[in-house]
Image: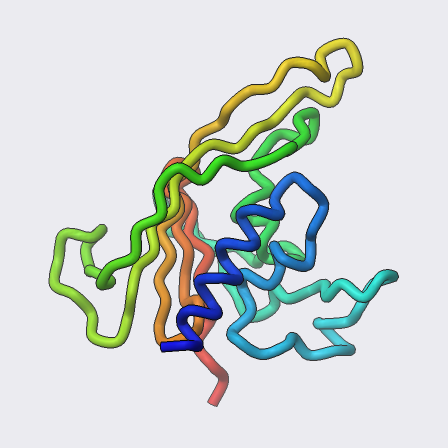
Length: 171
């Protein structure tokens, strides 16, 4: 249970770090409990931040089922949905609920060994244009995390209609 608690704490720190420049904490939300590999797809850039941890993930459009390759840092697929002329300046988590994972959008039977974490709230974003930088908008989000053991298996962004899903391990 301590491993699951560590994973939940990494996720909590990641939400807190959004918009304040603590990129390492955001990337750590998607790590499976171990440090990412160094070199190759997990090579470091500059200040020691891992990049390219997106290699073991797939992004699924929940409307049409199309699968996309993730960005170099998979966290950007979940949190990078704001238009480029907007800047994320923070996040307000208003709901944090942990419970059993249920099939069929949460209405079906529970899945043994899997837990869900529902996190909702608002991103705080502002325009990048200098004359509008004082104007902050609140953009809602709902994320549904599927955790198996201490490992994040998938995250659905309910309002963006995407799911970031871990690919099955190669045999």
